[in-house]
Image (cartoon, rainbow, N blue to C red; front, side, top):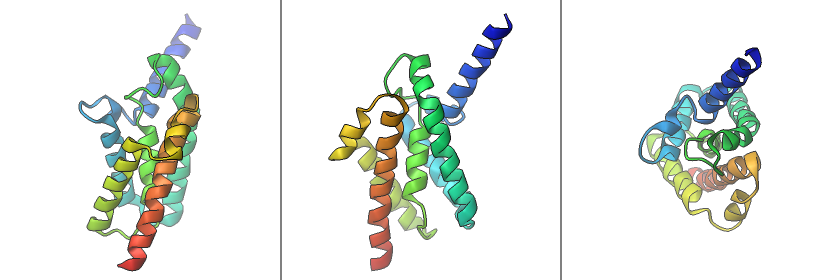
Length: 156
């Protein structure tokens, strides 16, 4: 009985974490909700680069820890409820970007584009099994977005 209760608690924690406090259950475009959570965290923490880096690393680490188990729980590859990968990718996309509304909007739409379209190697990365496939495609989409944003910031 105790083991079953422990298993149920673990499942709930995995669902809570992987869905970013159940944002992934919101209707219509769950990945967008996870990305918007990244924007919110950016707005709250971007002034402290150390804190922002720690949060980003923690989200990435948690994502790798829970996503494989989340696939098992939902019995589906890269289930739509799992949005911690979008959260991680968006945090990477906004890393060291000045807090200007137009830059945040550009980064948001660029990240969503790369996350949805999955150009080039991002599509291959998505095919990896478990947490690697779920997390790494969004991490790469975030890195590509951030690289483009760094160029835009320097031009402006």
